[in-house]
Amino acid sequence: MQSKGIKRKALAAAFPHTIPILTGFGFLGMAYGIQMSVNGFPFYYPMLMAMTIFGGSLEFVCVSMLLSRFAPLETFLMALLIQARHLFYGVAMLDQYRHMGWKRFYLIFGLCDESFSINCSAEVPKGVDKGWFYFFVTLLNQSYWVCAATLGGLLGSLITFDTMGLDFVMTAMFVVIFLEQWLKEKQHLSSLIGVGASVLCLILFGKDSFLVPAMCVILCLLTLCRKPIEKAGDAL
Image 1 (cartoon, rainbow, N blue to C red):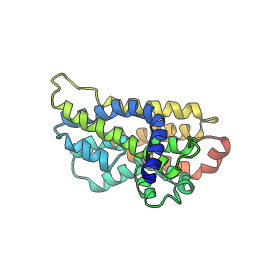
Image 2 (cartoon, helix red, strand yellow; image 1 turned 180 degrees about the vertical axis):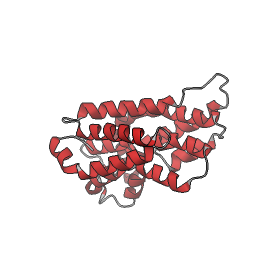
Image 3 (cartoon, rainbow, N blue to C red; image 1 turned 30 degrees about the vertical axis):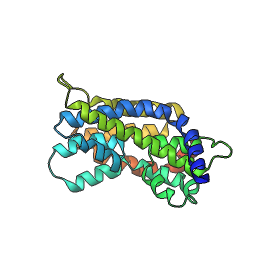
Image 4 (cartoon, rainbow, N blue to C red; image 1 turned 90 degrees about the horizontal axis):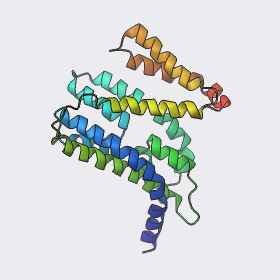
Protein backbone atom coordinates (compact mmCIF):
# COMPACT_ATOMS: atom_id res chain seq x y z
CA MET A 1 0.00 0.00 0.00
CA GLN A 2 2.82 2.38 0.86
CA SER A 3 4.49 1.61 -2.49
CA LYS A 4 1.25 2.39 -4.35
CA GLY A 5 0.98 5.68 -2.48
CA ILE A 6 4.51 6.63 -3.50
CA LYS A 7 3.75 5.85 -7.13
CA ARG A 8 0.46 7.75 -7.15
CA LYS A 9 2.14 10.77 -5.58
CA ALA A 10 4.92 10.71 -8.18
CA LEU A 11 2.40 10.28 -11.03
CA ALA A 12 0.34 13.23 -9.76
CA ALA A 13 3.48 15.37 -9.59
CA ALA A 14 4.75 14.31 -13.02
CA PHE A 15 1.54 14.66 -15.04
CA PRO A 16 1.25 18.50 -15.03
CA HIS A 17 4.78 18.77 -16.43
CA THR A 18 3.82 16.58 -19.39
CA ILE A 19 0.62 18.37 -20.43
CA PRO A 20 2.39 20.57 -23.05
CA ILE A 21 4.01 17.40 -24.42
CA LEU A 22 0.57 15.77 -24.68
CA THR A 23 -0.58 18.62 -26.92
CA GLY A 24 2.45 18.47 -29.21
CA PHE A 25 2.71 14.69 -29.35
CA GLY A 26 -1.02 14.42 -30.00
CA PHE A 27 -0.77 16.40 -33.22
CA LEU A 28 2.61 15.10 -34.44
CA GLY A 29 1.86 11.50 -33.50
CA MET A 30 -1.45 11.52 -35.37
CA ALA A 31 0.22 13.10 -38.39
CA TYR A 32 2.82 10.34 -38.33
CA GLY A 33 0.18 7.61 -37.99
CA ILE A 34 -1.88 9.07 -40.84
CA GLN A 35 1.20 9.32 -43.05
CA MET A 36 2.00 5.65 -42.41
CA SER A 37 -1.59 4.68 -43.19
CA VAL A 38 -1.88 6.61 -46.46
CA ASN A 39 1.38 4.99 -47.58
CA GLY A 40 -0.20 1.56 -47.22
CA PHE A 41 0.86 0.44 -43.75
CA PRO A 42 -1.69 -1.02 -41.28
CA PHE A 43 -2.25 0.77 -37.96
CA TYR A 44 -0.06 -1.61 -35.98
CA TYR A 45 3.05 -0.46 -37.85
CA PRO A 46 3.08 3.06 -36.35
CA MET A 47 1.91 1.60 -33.02
CA LEU A 48 4.78 -0.91 -32.79
CA MET A 49 7.33 1.55 -34.14
CA ALA A 50 6.26 4.14 -31.56
CA MET A 51 6.64 1.54 -28.82
CA THR A 52 10.05 0.22 -29.90
CA ILE A 53 11.82 3.07 -31.73
CA PHE A 54 10.27 6.04 -29.90
CA GLY A 55 12.16 8.61 -31.93
CA GLY A 56 9.74 11.00 -33.61
CA SER A 57 12.08 12.39 -36.27
CA LEU A 58 13.48 8.93 -37.03
CA GLU A 59 10.00 7.42 -37.29
CA PHE A 60 8.99 10.00 -39.90
CA VAL A 61 12.13 9.19 -41.88
CA CYS A 62 11.36 5.46 -41.52
CA VAL A 63 8.26 5.92 -43.68
CA SER A 64 10.41 6.65 -46.73
CA MET A 65 13.00 4.06 -45.66
CA LEU A 66 10.39 1.30 -45.64
CA LEU A 67 9.21 2.30 -49.10
CA SER A 68 12.70 2.55 -50.62
CA ARG A 69 15.22 -0.08 -51.67
CA PHE A 70 16.76 -2.46 -49.13
CA ALA A 71 19.84 -0.68 -47.74
CA PRO A 72 20.61 -1.89 -44.19
CA LEU A 73 23.94 -0.09 -43.80
CA GLU A 74 22.56 3.24 -45.00
CA THR A 75 19.50 2.79 -42.77
CA PHE A 76 21.68 2.02 -39.75
CA LEU A 77 23.89 5.07 -40.32
CA MET A 78 20.86 7.29 -40.88
CA ALA A 79 19.22 6.11 -37.67
CA LEU A 80 22.44 6.49 -35.69
CA LEU A 81 23.15 9.99 -36.92
CA ILE A 82 19.59 11.29 -36.59
CA GLN A 83 19.44 10.13 -32.98
CA ALA A 84 23.09 10.92 -32.18
CA ARG A 85 22.11 13.93 -30.07
CA HIS A 86 20.85 11.46 -27.46
CA LEU A 87 24.48 10.55 -26.78
CA PHE A 88 24.91 13.99 -25.24
CA TYR A 89 21.59 13.72 -23.39
CA GLY A 90 22.63 10.35 -21.98
CA VAL A 91 25.94 11.65 -20.68
CA ALA A 92 24.17 14.61 -19.05
CA MET A 93 21.73 12.28 -17.24
CA LEU A 94 24.24 9.70 -15.98
CA ASP A 95 24.39 11.07 -12.46
CA GLN A 96 20.63 11.55 -12.12
CA TYR A 97 19.83 8.01 -13.30
CA ARG A 98 22.74 6.27 -11.59
CA HIS A 99 20.91 4.97 -8.50
CA MET A 100 17.46 4.34 -9.97
CA GLY A 101 17.64 0.54 -9.88
CA TRP A 102 15.70 -1.28 -12.60
CA LYS A 103 13.95 1.95 -13.59
CA ARG A 104 17.12 3.32 -15.13
CA PHE A 105 16.90 0.82 -18.00
CA TYR A 106 13.52 2.19 -19.08
CA LEU A 107 14.63 5.77 -18.41
CA ILE A 108 17.57 5.24 -20.77
CA PHE A 109 15.38 3.63 -23.44
CA GLY A 110 12.63 6.26 -23.18
CA LEU A 111 14.93 9.29 -23.17
CA CYS A 112 13.68 11.81 -25.72
CA ASP A 113 14.10 15.56 -26.12
CA GLU A 114 10.99 16.35 -24.11
CA SER A 115 11.63 13.88 -21.26
CA PHE A 116 15.22 15.07 -21.04
CA SER A 117 14.08 18.68 -20.79
CA ILE A 118 11.60 17.94 -17.99
CA ASN A 119 13.74 15.51 -15.98
CA CYS A 120 16.79 17.72 -16.28
CA SER A 121 15.17 20.99 -15.23
CA ALA A 122 12.03 20.22 -13.20
CA GLU A 123 12.13 20.65 -9.45
CA VAL A 124 10.79 17.45 -7.93
CA PRO A 125 8.35 18.40 -5.14
CA LYS A 126 9.41 17.64 -1.61
CA GLY A 127 8.31 14.19 -0.50
CA VAL A 128 8.07 12.84 -4.06
CA ASP A 129 10.37 9.99 -5.04
CA LYS A 130 12.68 11.22 -7.79
CA GLY A 131 13.03 7.84 -9.45
CA TRP A 132 9.30 7.39 -9.85
CA PHE A 133 8.89 11.02 -10.90
CA TYR A 134 11.40 10.58 -13.74
CA PHE A 135 9.84 7.21 -14.61
CA PHE A 136 6.30 8.59 -14.95
CA VAL A 137 7.45 11.63 -16.96
CA THR A 138 9.09 9.25 -19.42
CA LEU A 139 6.20 6.77 -19.43
CA LEU A 140 3.54 9.44 -19.91
CA ASN A 141 5.42 11.06 -22.79
CA GLN A 142 5.87 7.74 -24.58
CA SER A 143 2.22 6.82 -23.94
CA TYR A 144 1.09 10.07 -25.57
CA TRP A 145 3.16 9.31 -28.66
CA VAL A 146 2.09 5.66 -28.93
CA CYS A 147 -1.60 6.47 -28.51
CA ALA A 148 -1.49 9.37 -30.99
CA ALA A 149 0.42 7.34 -33.60
CA THR A 150 -2.01 4.42 -33.23
CA LEU A 151 -5.03 6.70 -33.50
CA GLY A 152 -3.55 8.35 -36.58
CA GLY A 153 -2.97 4.93 -38.13
CA LEU A 154 -6.60 4.00 -37.52
CA LEU A 155 -8.00 7.30 -38.78
CA GLY A 156 -5.75 7.27 -41.83
CA SER A 157 -7.73 4.42 -43.37
CA LEU A 158 -10.87 6.57 -43.21
CA ILE A 159 -9.35 9.61 -44.92
CA THR A 160 -10.58 10.24 -48.45
CA PHE A 161 -9.09 13.70 -49.13
CA ASP A 162 -5.64 14.39 -50.58
CA THR A 163 -2.95 14.22 -47.89
CA MET A 164 -0.16 15.61 -50.08
CA GLY A 165 2.11 17.81 -47.96
CA LEU A 166 1.35 16.03 -44.70
CA ASP A 167 4.95 14.90 -44.43
CA PHE A 168 5.90 18.60 -44.18
CA VAL A 169 4.95 18.36 -40.51
CA MET A 170 8.39 16.82 -39.88
CA THR A 171 10.09 19.76 -41.60
CA ALA A 172 7.99 22.16 -39.55
CA MET A 173 8.95 20.30 -36.37
CA PHE A 174 12.65 20.62 -37.19
CA VAL A 175 12.26 24.32 -37.97
CA VAL A 176 10.62 24.92 -34.59
CA ILE A 177 13.35 22.95 -32.80
CA PHE A 178 16.01 24.96 -34.64
CA LEU A 179 14.36 28.28 -33.75
CA GLU A 180 14.08 27.28 -30.09
CA GLN A 181 17.74 26.29 -30.09
CA TRP A 182 18.70 29.57 -31.75
CA LEU A 183 16.82 31.61 -29.14
CA LYS A 184 18.48 29.69 -26.28
CA GLU A 185 22.01 30.14 -27.61
CA LYS A 186 24.21 33.11 -26.87
CA GLN A 187 26.79 32.78 -29.65
CA HIS A 188 24.86 30.51 -32.07
CA LEU A 189 28.00 28.47 -32.78
CA SER A 190 26.28 25.06 -32.73
CA SER A 191 23.42 26.27 -34.95
CA LEU A 192 25.81 27.84 -37.45
CA ILE A 193 27.78 24.58 -37.59
CA GLY A 194 24.57 22.71 -38.42
CA VAL A 195 23.46 25.16 -41.12
CA GLY A 196 26.93 25.53 -42.63
CA ALA A 197 27.63 21.79 -42.78
CA SER A 198 24.20 21.09 -44.29
CA VAL A 199 24.54 23.73 -47.00
CA LEU A 200 28.07 22.60 -47.87
CA CYS A 201 27.09 18.92 -48.14
CA LEU A 202 23.98 19.86 -50.14
CA ILE A 203 26.20 21.62 -52.70
CA LEU A 204 28.77 18.80 -52.78
CA PHE A 205 26.51 15.73 -52.72
CA GLY A 206 23.14 16.92 -54.01
CA LYS A 207 19.71 16.83 -52.40
CA ASP A 208 19.35 13.03 -52.58
CA SER A 209 22.65 12.14 -50.87
CA PHE A 210 23.64 15.02 -48.59
CA LEU A 211 21.92 14.01 -45.34
CA VAL A 212 24.27 11.26 -44.10
CA PRO A 213 27.52 13.15 -44.83
CA ALA A 214 26.01 16.31 -43.35
CA MET A 215 25.12 14.51 -40.11
CA CYS A 216 28.64 13.02 -39.97
CA VAL A 217 30.25 16.43 -40.43
CA ILE A 218 27.94 18.04 -37.85
CA LEU A 219 28.61 15.31 -35.29
CA CYS A 220 32.38 15.59 -35.78
CA LEU A 221 32.40 19.39 -35.60
CA LEU A 222 30.18 19.48 -32.52
CA THR A 223 32.46 16.96 -30.82
CA LEU A 224 35.59 18.95 -31.71
CA CYS A 225 34.01 22.26 -30.71
CA ARG A 226 32.31 20.99 -27.55
CA LYS A 227 34.47 23.05 -25.16
CA PRO A 228 34.12 26.36 -27.05
CA ILE A 229 30.37 25.78 -27.34
CA GLU A 230 30.03 25.09 -23.60
CA LYS A 231 32.23 28.05 -22.78
CA ALA A 232 30.01 30.29 -24.90
CA GLY A 233 26.99 29.03 -23.00
CA ASP A 234 25.39 27.33 -26.01
CA ALA A 235 23.60 24.03 -25.55
CA LEU A 236 24.56 20.97 -27.59
